[in-house]
Image 1 (cartoon, rainbow, N blue to C red):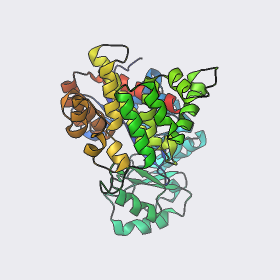
Image 2: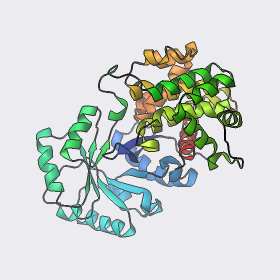
Image 3: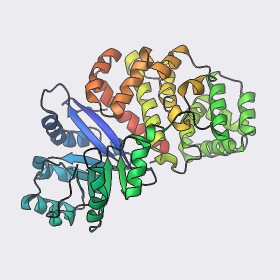
Image 4: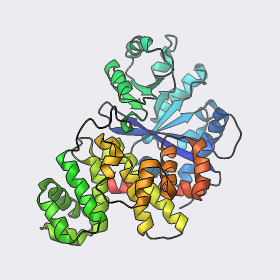
Length: 412
């Protein structure tokens, strides 16, 4: 995979709709090793990386069919470089430092005619900006920097235009609920990975069946035991047969029995399916569940980084452990039960358990790296790269491969 010559960090922050389904990502870039102020660093990176990203790996691999929200400073806004972006998939965010004068309004009018979606970043409402509101599709409001008492009036004013209002920096379920009631259309933040109160509900029957199956696969249980677990849980059997009969596996022979399905698919494929299916479960959001997205990319990223670190092209035991650690690291959020209770009966290795419970050891460092990268804490990423013995180029290559793999697995 080609990697651009300029070294930079790449981050994706999920953007969800009112159903808590992923509709897009804000792409965040920062040049590595520069001492610029944050804004200057970002401005420099955003202009060069857009063209580099397109030529080196393509936006589709990063976005997986979703919208890409890209911060745009004045120089980039006025540049023809923007027209290289995939128009139907790009949301151009005008940074709050841009003065919304006649020149900017005219440029926005041109970009709208080309078919771009336009957004105002960290915006404060002003009744004098009628012309720009007529062109804008999305207004982003930083809920931490806005007086909560003023939000209803601001939203009411903005509703005069057919635009969507996005709440930025939504970090808790309570904040999401409040913004939902206020009428926000879109939400950005990590509220979905932070349960309100742990240990308030039991794992349901379907979840317990999945965890039992995962335990059996971890212990390399004989096929008779696997078959029996599927038989007593019809929903698991149905999903297994649907999986193995899918076009994705390229099989011309239809599978009719559970044992045949297990044999044809193989325990490694079943283990991956179980790990990901834990997050899909009965959730109506399906593949757009943000926890599934995060877990899949996290697990695959850790697996690829392990392969790079041990210099092996094919997944072995170490890489499988890394993948499992990434997937399991969000189960406490999924089930709203402490991690210790979840892994108590899974008979995991000491290395995996230590990583999940306290972020210790090599796997713990990799998990911490993946977590810091997800929330675009680039300052914390740099020392973790050194600790893990991974270069920035290796990280970027693994990120892009993980994004692409997730899209292929989920059929996006």
